Length: 175
Length: 69
Image 1: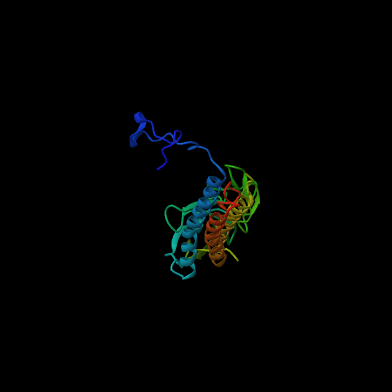
Image 2 (image 1 turned 90 degrees about the vertical axis):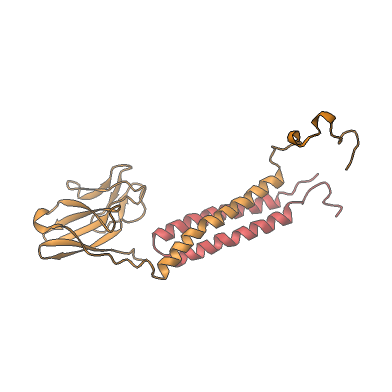
């Protein structure tokens, strides 16, 4: 250990609880900056792992979506041009059923694809509108037509049987 | 002392590619193109050893003692 005049440890500071007076300890030099960048790359690598795991799970068919059919409403209870809210497939996935014509029904999961606000069917405008940031969706396809959302609403396949409307499954996006 | 910013620039590019790949990955996940998700995840993971390699290679460049070695 060097004991020249500048490097010697003063007697009063010669204990390990007070050895925090290092030069430039808090400055960020070129090497420290590069170290931060490399560490951030590691964070990104780790953060992308769960997405890959979920994707692999979907690819292996472990999450093949077939839910028990769920009754939404009776045909008589919904007039043409009206909508009914329901939850499908789980009680946390709110959805909306719209009767467009006498025998034409469409249903979408109505969490806006922008920030998951509920999307409403506006009868007068013939559009589905998200009130949070004025996102607008086409009612026939679920595709976004205005505002911030970029992805279509997930469509729910419905099935009419014995005067009742059933939700069958959630349609996958066309690739 | 002459500083070498080559490593800094390469690492900045690596990190910006990380950000781009992560953004694409999340979008492809919600578009349900799961093969693309795996591709972007691999890109992100490969960039990490690349960043470490560049850091190891460049950390002592441009220092006062570098030329003597």
